[in-house]
Image 1 (cartoon, rainbow, N blue to C red):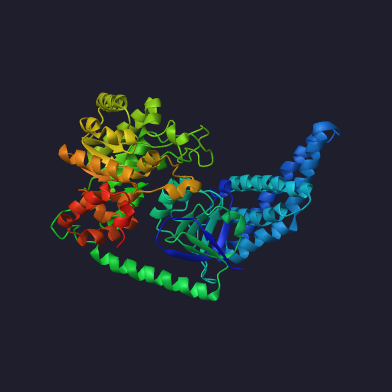
Image 2: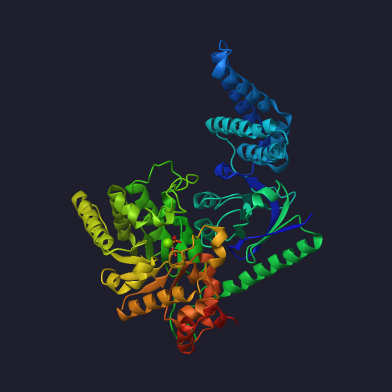
Length: 575
Ligand code: PEP
Ligand code: MG
């Protein structure tokens, strides 16, 4: 039966594929295809892992052999259940199916089958049997651990051509780090139960140029492993088990999208200049040094936001040292071949926890120790990052961008830390380069007191994602308030317009690096407000450039002021 689910539209494009269901805690197992000739080896690997776990459990059981009462007896019974589950035919046959038929690697096959069997446990009437799901998960966890001890010797192979169906990942939640994990992965689309349009998971999905819909509430409950799914990333719609007519319709839409993208590629080398000769800077937002490649491929004239926190996440608390960071920043700088790179200092916290599955457990993490607050609370970590950035600045044009500035005391501390980092490098005789220092304007207090901050910084970058979150008091990751996320709220527009005007008065560069910069429906408005520098994920650069090429800022200035002053700005933007 066809099912249509609605969520938050995250990206352009349509994906059609078979669902792969993944529990959040298991999306970080490796997902890759194996070659047909590697199937036997992979099955043998699974058998070895199973033998290893059986042996481990047997040993544990023997240790308990003489205790027949109390907790030990219970534990012995539990181990018995685990042994039974290890021999379970449905688990074994299922895993074998995923490896032989789909050519999934062993870890992926195990977690895929776990989702199938666990769902059956969930549907059981008997509470005792229902609870066996937890045992099954533990057994799979043991097997995954055993597999880790015997890493796959096989190399990732291209996706099997036979069935010709791409795969889409359906999960309750995916952390930004999980998402990054799939950068060069196998999935053609993503669906999650939770998340808002500007959650970092959505932002990374967009940068992957993969159709995704987030905040689909019960998607991971309603979609079953291997269901055929259509993801319309633009409309925020997920269709499960579509009719042949729907498939044809979306197949057509998919092809139209491709044709559109091919057409846009023609303006890649055209300078972004408006009809009245205003030059506009279109910069890229990146998460990793290798993202400079897609940025250059669409004609970005620099990196306006390098979100360095992705180098820090999912490392089990082991933060990257100075050399590792220096190498990453240097690669980004060299990757841009002389174009400027704006490196934002680490912005962890809130929906970007250091550990993918360990949510910040403070009551209001978005208002907590994140971004510059965390950096200043960890001076050794911060100095390490600043030294690495300064060293990378010896290889090209580098700007340092400070996230979430709200207090003058923070500004003073940042400058003092920079001076200290330079001093430390001097003492070591290390080569480093000059940097311009900018502030992110993403807290309403900073936008309201922007003139104060302008005196202390070389440039500004408006982080509209957080600015909207804090101005409108809506959690950007909470789908239940996602409908209140409104870039066109008069208060938001006022803050953005005033920040641009103040920077211009002070003769300092100002850019927008939040998602508003890549929204083509807002390009003309922002040009009208005087913005000449936009930073966005590379996928949006050409569509925004197309808008720039069609705009005449002389005609937009007065209109933009009217929009900002109006009660309902959105109505002015209807074409
Ligand atoms: C923003 O807040 O607009 C921004 C660009 O930073 P991030 O999305 O990483 O919080
Ligand atoms: Mg931000």
